[in-house]
Length: 119
View 1: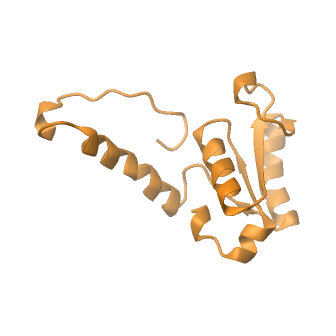
View 2 (view 1 turned 60 degrees about the horizontal axis):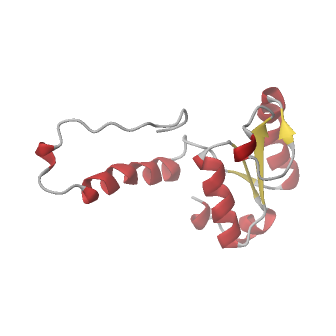
């Protein structure tokens, strides 16, 4: 999604709220695109997932993300409910199939842990 943003939107920066893969993906994309990113995290985020920045309570995150995006001209990057994000998440299935050895029918059950967001 971020790769499709016009240059003028990238210059204004992006904002998201997440403590998982979405936050990491937005941070990495922002770094590679030379874009400033604000990642809103809950104060109960485990230390291992914190990488600096302001920690917020859940209600603050809900109130802040869209207001701050509007005030600063940032683009909000949703974790799951946008067609480009959904398309990107759909590639997970393709990656699994490509890594399988032999015909798909021999894999009767494929178990994996998924996050609490869009997947």
